Length: 344
Image 1 (cartoon, rainbow, N blue to C red):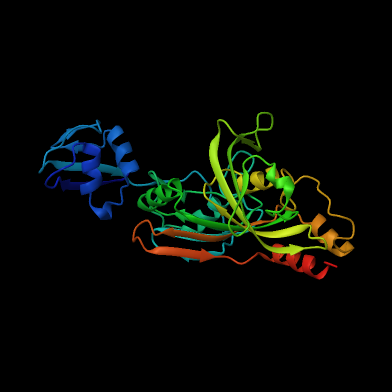
Image 2 (image 1 turned 45 degrees about the vertical axis):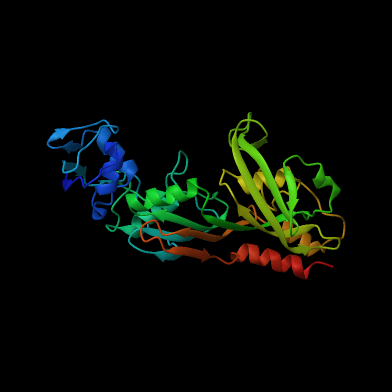
């Protein structure tokens, strides 16, 4: 297996721990994140003055000679596939994709082909330095198969680590557009009795709960108030459809990013997404609130009406602020048009 050797000297006033000193002084062009350095330490790939050291807490002196042996990234076991991608932005460190509905992000049992990762491996070709020692894209967040919209993917260890830190700190801006049954409104007395739901200034619905896997259906998430993982979703009504209004176009913000979060939270409030086969329920609009054609357009929508419309973050290498927007995809735009036209 091919290797590359990185050598440098510990600068003045080193931190008290070896791992922190390595992270501070390793050459920037080595593109080794703290996570990767920690693994190299564990693997015995780092020497201090000629002696291998595995203890991250070991002390190191100014002037110590560090040598690191890094294996060149191995080829991924995932097959590259020539699948067209809607590339919104790309540089040497990352890529932003506008994912279509119907595409799975990462291969899994039962879905080994046709995924975003398969497509990215073909798109990158040899221009992928690899993540974690393997030539693979760095997936730092996902959106569901039948959710469309923006996704950022790392191409290097440094970018992967920097983006992962921002997602962990909940500092990434993520806005979604959704079409839901009913209209969330602060004047709705029913919502006042929904635990975890509250309204903020501007008629913004804020849902705060814990989320965890459903006890009996492991493919679903469930709302909890003890245990699980903290989750916060905010939603604002952009447009109402029907007379009386029976459907709403929402703008949703994620403070946290849990699996199925928007879908679960809105369903918990009685406003499941149109087309959602798991959480949407079978809520029926009031008779004649929509025309027959409007009702049919809503009933026949083939997926959850959810789109990742805005993605904002700091570039993990340059630090530059980046923000991307994606318009509603054609199927959701057509549904909105149908609801507008066929509202009495």
